[in-house]
Amino acid sequence: MAIRIRECEIVYRTRNVDAPSRTVASSEDVYRLVPELLHRAHESLVVLLLDIRRQVIGKHEVARGNTATCPVEGSAVFRAAVVANASAIILVHNHPSGVSEPSAEDLELTKRLQEGGKLLGVAVLDHVIVTPDGYYSMLDGGLLK
Image (cartoon, rainbow, N blue to C red; front, side, top):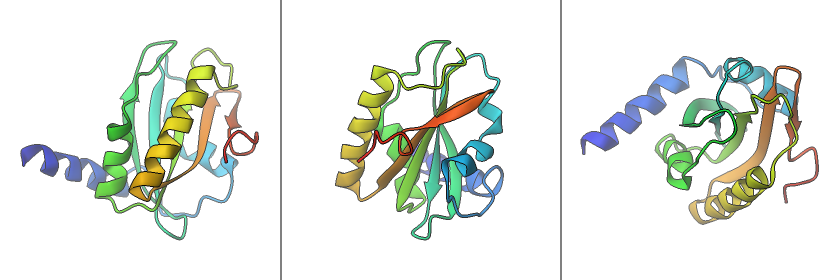
């Protein structure tokens, strides 16, 4: 029971602190919501939690890795979404190398999370890779269904 309460507190804090309530209309909007990722020396994965109107209701960091990889568990990605009653999520992670194109691992992870989201009723709308020089949206790039 203590773990469940702790998870709820994390979602509650992220709802009010770092994610202003606003509609995400483009990948550029996503890029602007995660300035903290741009200059990190390690990879991090953040999930933007969205309501039915595509309003941001939370921002939650679900994984930290090293300079080249970031191990991600599907349960960690969707835990915050389920607790916050989010209808959709957008995945965002940084590439410390400065190369914004997705790796094969990025593509495979996104595919697995899309399938998991279908089972939970939480849509994975996009996966955006950010660097200090710009970003790459898998949705804009035609890599998402």
